[in-house]
Length: 271
Image (cartoon, rainbow, N blue to C red; front, side):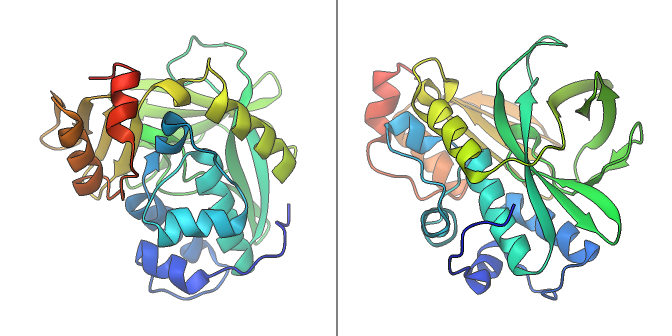
C-alpha cells in the first residue's frame, strides 16, 4: 500500500528516535529502526480518553508523534512507520489483525489492529511498532514454528485455520497476541477501525488510560493508575493522584501531556 503523497520529514523522524545509521532499505536498517522507534515513541491512548479525534494523515502523525513528543496507538505508530520505510525505499504493505491478547484462545474478535509486511531480498518480514505492552522491538521473519529472538521477548509465528498466529513467550508460557492474514489493507480500512476504537463507548480506549514503552532493560506499562515494570528489579505500584499520573507520563514515558487529563481521570473514576 503506497500511502498518499505527503512531505515525509525523515530527518526529523531520525532525530526523534535517535537513528544515525545509513538511509538504505536493508535488513540492518529495518532492525535498527524497529528497535529505536518504540524505545523513543510510546504507546498511549490519551486522545481517545480525552475525547479528541485521532487523525491518520501523515502531517497529523508527524505533528503529534514526531514534533509534538506524543505517542499513539497501533494505527498511528504503524502508518507513520510505513511512511518512513517507504521513504527509504522499502517494499511495505499494511495488514490487519484480530487481537487475542488477554482473550480466550480461539476468540473471534474484530480486526482492530494494524501491522506491516516488509519484503526484503525475497524474504517477507512482519513489523509492528504499536502493540502496547508487548510491542515487537525487532521485525520477525514470516516463517512457521520458528522461535525468534528480539531484544526483549521471544516470539513465534504459527499457522492456524488459514491465518498466521503471533505468540510471545512470557515467563514459561506462550501467549497469543493476534492473528492476521496477508491481504493488504488500505488507509480507508484503518480509518474506519480507528474511528471505532477511538470513539465507541464499548471501546476500552475511550474509558481507560494506557501507556507502554520498552527500554533497553525491560518494559514499563501504565494501566489507569497502576504502573509496572517488567525486567530486572520488576515492580508494580499504585499512583495516588492525577499529578502523579501526569509526572509518570512525562518522566517515564516521555509524553508531553495534553490539557484535560486530570478531568478525564476523574470522569472515568480511574484513581
